[in-house]
Length: 142
Image (cartoon, rainbow, N blue to C red; front, side, top):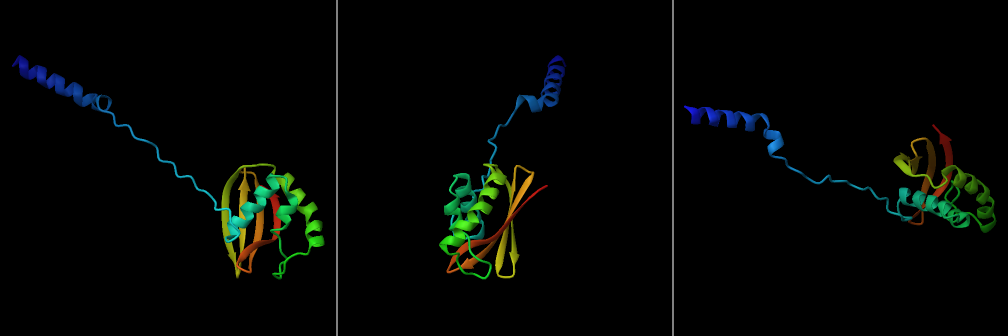
């Protein structure tokens, strides 16, 4: 009888503290989303433009710009875009991209990047000769 009482007591203790006796540990799986930096996708060309601005290379960023009608800018037109791109550069200022949204506009794409949960930059892109170019951009604060 004493042994039965001891077994019942031992089993009830193990049952009450069962979660603490046996613990299973696992690794947390994190999926890191990376954006392919290529001019063959709308998101890629916008990312390249942002990276060029963060590297203080405004004139290389101007090379990724085109007119809304699908023609590329001449050298003097690219130079005139440098002041607008410099303003965008100061707006972004090495901020972290916290969200990316892609919308379809008939044949073009609109890429919206959110920076530090407080600022947004919107890029309209167009496919010209199998490469995407930014045709228009804007910025706004939430």
